Image (cartoon, rainbow, N blue to C red; front, side, top):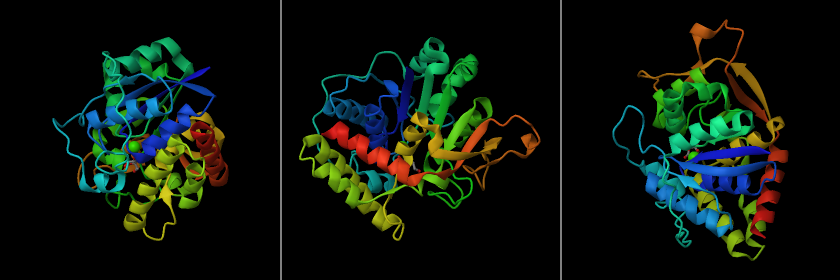
Length: 313
Ligand code: BDR
Ligand code: CA
């Protein structure tokens, strides 16, 4: 069976991504590595442990790197707290887990898993790409071992969401992202497709109607996110299902159609954080990145809503 590792800055859509992974029998969720972004590392790890507990899953959680490769600290942006709540899960209160993060560092866990599971390993980062870049720098051999990397981030054919040119996850660590797309084959699930997959309170009502603590949690966190979207993206008609789409594609690659391209990330101002084709590798017949540009939205929405309903029932 395929093995899945998530790399999360948990976060509301990270919560939905994690829930979809826990609800999917096609791949075994063998670990979650924490990263920074929507929240600080410790808050994210706390959320990962508490949420997996809530759903009765004993998934191991690992501490990742706490800031971008070329920085020595990290501050949560105001907009992140507005969208995800200060605690990352829309101020919903769920009990702390009695479990703790594992002793082994997230980057080492990823390297070990790559050597153990090889092509059966699917890695899904839905935050900054710092952990993956650090793992590739520490052990370059993993680039040809890991089966698939499906990351949420970037914007190729549409504007960014933190600036006209940059998407939030890439913007956190453009140097790491540039390193990753140049050193390992990836599938990019960017705003090009995630802003086409939208969820509304019509769907979250189905989780609430289950009448379970788990269903109420999923509905409450997602409604918080939908309300934030009404302010930040009025007219969009729902919240963007960024991170869960990456998990969806990890499980079922046919959900998207991709453009094969040799991608790079601008690391210099003024366009630092832009995902764009690399002119120097334009004629290279081998393309390292598959950028998702079309998505079967209805199919994905059905998958997400029904699988999370079963998980929360
Ligand atoms: C991405 O940024 C984060 O806020 C979300 O969790 C998602 O991973 C969307 O740009
Ligand atoms: Ca995220």
